[in-house]
Length: 239
Image (cartoon, rainbow, N blue to C red; front, top):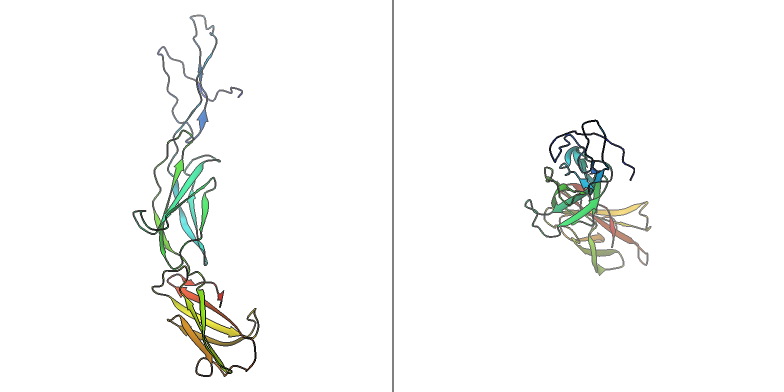
């Protein structure tokens, strides 16, 4: 590239130091000899080199939950320039040796960590993968609980002319601490709810012998369920 000097050092030694450079930045250097009358020799060009990165900073509100799928982790650049590669590490263990651990590498100061287990505690931290091959230290780890993901459909139970029972499983969630809201409707968009059932179990009955009025014989009903956990209510899933 064209050489545009940012700073210079004159010395009688065979080395020079350049303090106060920007972190995680590639610099080019050259040197020449100068005689007693100020005449310069040809320049000697050195291989490009990069400064080490700063550790990312902690954002004031580092976590934004994304219902049913994961969460967004945010941090600050801490002086690192645009184009810096940040590695966001997440784990279900505080020492980052849990199940489902992962790493997301981005050049922004946030990362959407998705596809995680619902109703689970996750820990997250970030480091910089430096231009010079040297990684920074981690910022301070943070923790959060994910929202529950939709439960998984299992099967129908007893179905009569006036009632129906539905079953489900916790699905991709930590089951401990979950409760459920099951609903039935005459439309698949659930604009009108025929009956609802709040339960800590994984089944519900509607109509005769269950929640709500008796179901209408020979009629199509739709069913859905959502889970609520430590972080709040998740999204509905169809049954």
